[in-house]
Image (tube, helix red, strand yellow):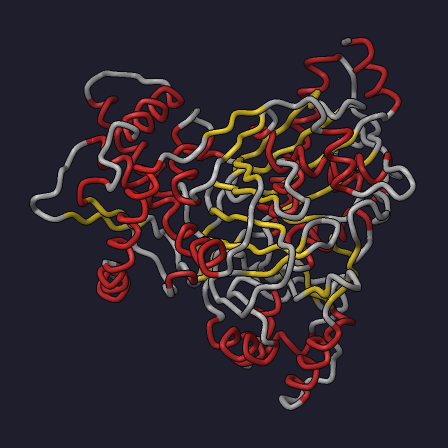
Length: 532
């Protein structure tokens, strides 16, 4: 087997996916069976500068090169081979955000990530104009907010894109975007697999009144669907990716996608009536719908699969950051008493304790809001823990409350989708760090959705693996073969996973917790106002 993998590496019969997550950049190289044969990682972190969540261009390129170098070293260590060519490459990143460039290709303002909640004014105008929910993190919201705020840079914009689109552009020279990622920049019309023409015209008319003559379509990336060619790695791009000069140019590149799209691929959740939940630094769910929703809901985004089908998405800015902070505190406590506990064991022990808790957490309420949370109307966040004097204050209830908190805002949004809109979900797949400890995250998430949750054996590979699969799909698809069929027949055939059904007592307990959570939001809002 090792010799076969060596030959595949030498001959470029591989596919590479690289995904820029919030705290880690990950690369996964797969062989012709789509199994990971090498990986690379690079840790990074966003920073709050001038009240804007951002990563610098230096962060981006150091991170990409560090991740790729880690991958190349893994290939050499495992197989004794230098990575000189690859069959196909795809790049993915955190969706949304704002990276505007001038005619010289210069970034006009620091990268504004999805995490920023500064565009409320823009959203309040655009949502009724389009009769379509425009969330604060969307690229079009950032552009229009810059116009409303009379930011000087707007007049110089000739192109704006997302992180994944930026990386792809610099490595290939192509200003393009996968349709799933594009749907987080501007609304998509799934019938034409492109930006909605009516809304483009509405936006152009709106900004013309403010003295801007550009046409929005001219400064947006071109939309491509999964399976289409998105150019090739240029000589300059090869040097940017691998400064050692070992990797050669000319490698085919697939459309860049967002982490939502790669999550759908990684969990085989691109068919109608399937869904997936990604739970890491942020948390979001995506359900491929049979029809349009009955009305606009500000808690629900309408985006698309990588092949352009409509998806109802509930996105929350906060998930595991506060959980991680509490686990780190317990780690410090252990260290103070001379105990060294493996971090995985610590997480596992604390998470499993939650399963012995009262299903409603015994009167304990946690808010995990490191940053703002538009679903619940907060522009800023303040992590908060609150309880009544007679609450059942135990470690089990404390941990369950924090785990519930990581999912509570997502549940609030999905209660609208599932209970009010009566959307049907046949299968729900989970992936991301929250599911790393077996059973716990799945059981509580099943309670949140009142639906079985499956974690596939491949789920730990995550979005970078999903991106590699999209790169392989571009090269391997047969005439007329759809992405759902390719995934079901070639990628996931024979794959196994673990499914956990909801328990009635957990569902009732989580429902009770969320009602208290919503009624106590006033305390979280007061904390934002009072704690500066």
